[in-house]
Length: 386
Image 1: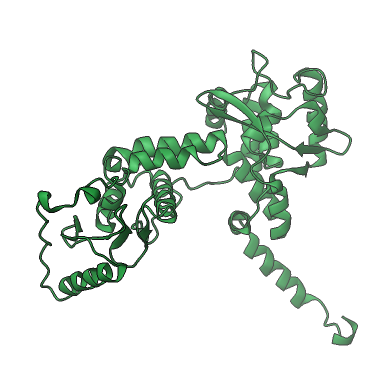
Image 2 (image 1 turned 30 degrees about the horizontal axis):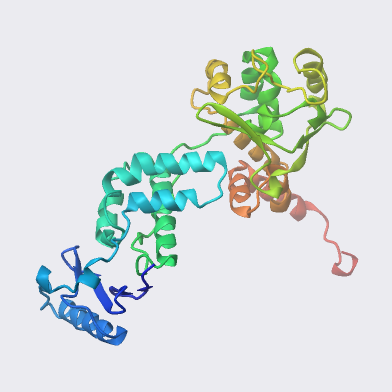
């Protein structure tokens, strides 16, 4: 690979001829290459410096290209930089990714990144061009928009590390990698939850209860087996999860070690566990708790069909399956659980998500005020006796 130097303005690379080539993206958003090559790297840097001064001083004009017949034959055979599409495929092929993650990246590339940018050489991806691309993404899908930006930034960081292009990364749009939540989640009330459970098919009622009172993910629920349930202590052992890629189920360990956990259920769910195991679970320790009609995992869209009917009965047409876990997390937060306890129960590795549920616990500030009232009403205790 021909050597390429990173720098704040422009790029310098060493050609197979041992001479140095300099280029930069000008105010016209086109890449301009020095009309001649240089014997030393210092000479190439000097040329870039003079071009930068012209731009800053408002006296810039595009450098004149050298006549084709004046380019030495040994330098004319420089391998062009890969296009974004070519480099993206190479980058993706060299990474060890979960099947669902790889599928998500491929969808982002196919739907949002490569159609407008894929044919461009890597060094044609300027800041202005990427800002135009980002502005053209649908603002009604902020999550996909931020994911596409973050993926492209990672791909270009890898190109810089591979010395294909010079830094800094042209993906520099403040706040582009963060998306605001469009769907505002309103936790279920206890009455709504009971109505929702009753409206579900009997063989799936426990799945809703586990989603809410255990705050389990759907993929964790769908993969539960008899050996994962400790009925005597009302404990669910989360050790695996199921995901689907192109409709094909794949069972694997949680993404992080924090996802491997024992979830204690409220004691009132013990009878529901016993009843479900007796009536609906497959036999044997590896039997699925929620098998499909064909004896396989219940695909999320299949579960969603009766769920949509049940949420209407509960008066919550806005509810999504994942919102069951959100309700469970808020219920846990309302008990006064600490941040660390919420993280352990939910299988989170960072406090950011658990903090959201703490903040969402309605009435928390009112409970604090009530406790302050109690403190004020209590007879004063001497400090030495506290």
